[in-house]
Image (cartoon, rainbow, N blue to C red):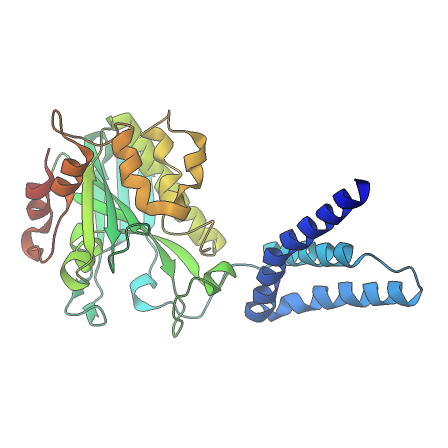
Length: 324
């Protein structure tokens, strides 16, 4: 019985080693500097072996994984000479009481996705007039399990801006899920107009955008907005790297949703792995404005935006579709 348990434990340990070792191989490829501490560890194990104090192979491999994790944590986020045009400029914020000024509010105009006019604005908002928040999800290629998530904040004077956490790509680099595990990209919290951040997806890419008006009081909306301003400042000041799993386009946004749904089970803190389900959960827990007796299917149908909205009157055209 004891022998069987030892064999089972050994097999389990070997299986558990597979994923971190595969991850380690990727780390050596994408971050060659990580080979140095790994080589030192293996050299030490070799000396140990030569002295006939043969270490367990499993122990050496687990130590190798641990060294790789520590090395990864010590590697700073990317700071390239140039970021690609859509993510070249980070927003800046100035706050005095109820007064919020956003500089570098992105407002691109697109002829095609690759051909755009880079425009940035400076806008000042009175936070005492913040009156609503919308959650937006964008699907593409028919995929329902994965989406891009955004938020939109609107004020009593009719002005709005959207917030989108995006992969910040260095010049000449293409995005990929595997490289995204190894600090190859930055993450940027974009603050921009709906005509830009939403319009790029509905009018240029023809992706499937849905916008859900949320049930939230002004105090909650201000707390939510402040959370994303703090995230944007932190990401820019620390060169926070993008991570496909732990720090992607949804993790930061979802981290603020406790304001919306305090009773949502804690297991959903890990939801960004399945971010296509976020809207369904917000509907289920009563965070989305709806009409009396409206089903989830009816809410989703009403909140679907469609394609090719007029740029000159974009936000009004969008709201005419989704207003409860």
